[in-house]
Length: 271
Figure 1: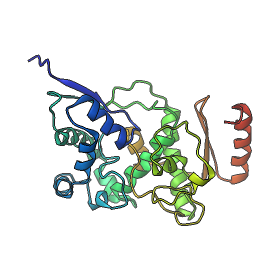
Figure 2: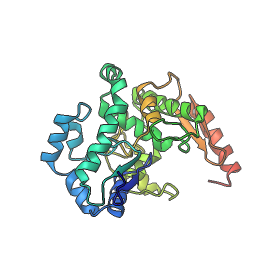
Figure 3: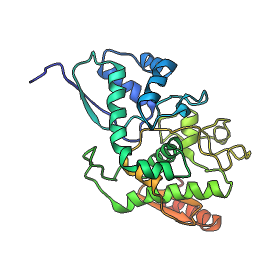
């Protein structure tokens, strides 16, 4: 059964559709433009919506950058050859997402949030969480860290509490996505934080108060999906991470948050 033409593509948690397209282009006989063209094909999208229960017309919102962002489950996949169609790649990843979501189906249907909104919350937790240390059987990641995994459920609780308080979600990762910046180390300017976008939750003009981004911002792991569906119940409204020590701190008031922010800036030489 050996197939010398078989290829393997690894799609990591937390990557954007732009990175997915680059991986497909670098491993198959397709271009990034072909990937993006398929994501805009309404006939194709309608066929997917009919086939998968978790796909809805929400993915066709004209303000969304990439229709299947957040819906393709990240994992390592094998395909017959470089001639594999983009449709086959997407179907394989959507089939895997269906397997992951199916056990949560009744919880999703009972949630105050739609599946589109839950995957959006999950994608934000994926990006805001420190590292990828939550173990998933699907990915074979054995670097499990219970505290880090719990952080994602706490992060989702912050976003939900801010929605309920009609506050902006204030998430830097949504600003980066709005600007199509994949480099998480690139510093953002004050002007960039005020970029008008249905993705940018850092706006302070009130237009995004109490609102989620228009759609997910990256691929999501099972751990982040679990965090979005079953967040912890807290009074937290703020969080800040110490990247060097892989710690996330949560607060229910701005005074303690600002104090910790100054402390961490001193510890991390202003970063």
